[in-house]
Length: 284
Ligand SMILES: C[S@@+](CC[C@H](N)C(=O)[O-])C[C@H]1O[C@@H](n2cnc3c(N)ncnc32)[C@H](O)[C@@H]1O
Image (cartoon, rainbow, N blue to C red; front, side):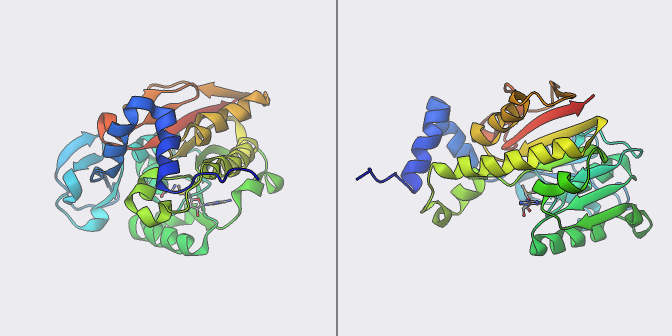
């Protein structure tokens, strides 16, 4: 009889301790600490919002205290997510696909940065899609909404229906989301080491699909909020091991994070922002 595989908090701890070694204690502490949040300013709003400026169009909303102004003047999210959306370098001339878009923070960050342009925000879950629609309706003016389409496809099979169709694709993939797991211990009760591996298979299917839906000359950003390398570098590595024609890894220094083999990892024990993994791919 085979030995039973460990599960629960203990298995979770030993999985990440093995990856991060001595750093795990500090990283775990940062993941459990109160989340830092930033306010992405709504460029369509005429009302003024004041607060500490983090970057252009972004305020630092210190420990959940909202900046002044009405809520639709700004959208609260992790600053790392804003960097991720901006890494797409989407201009008004680009046709953009946000493949896994709900609740919509990154779709907003893409539109706020370019003011207008064609966007398809896709989300498989019906409930989450309703929330996505609500967010887009609330923040984007009516006259610009005709350029925005919300769809509900399984993005793993998008490439079977459409190839080389978008100039910019954001794939913010479903992931282990360890910060969320640590915040809700009941979700850790059944945690097993195979969970991250299983998710990495879905992430790879999504990335392989996205890479085919991208137009030559286009840019694809793959991201997750996982700290597991299986869901980050390993997914991108698997794509490049297949020597996909025309795809090139782009190494760009972002305002936050540490360089990994295939991208950038923003971890909260360093800057307080994240976690977020970002990998940039272009097609030639
Ligand atoms: C990390 S969340 C996206 C967060 C979002 N980008 C944001 O910034 O607000 C991943 C999303 O992917 C959706 N999803 C999972 N599998 C999918 C699939 N096969 N096709 C499309 N969406 C999927 C999940 O329902 C979830 O809402």
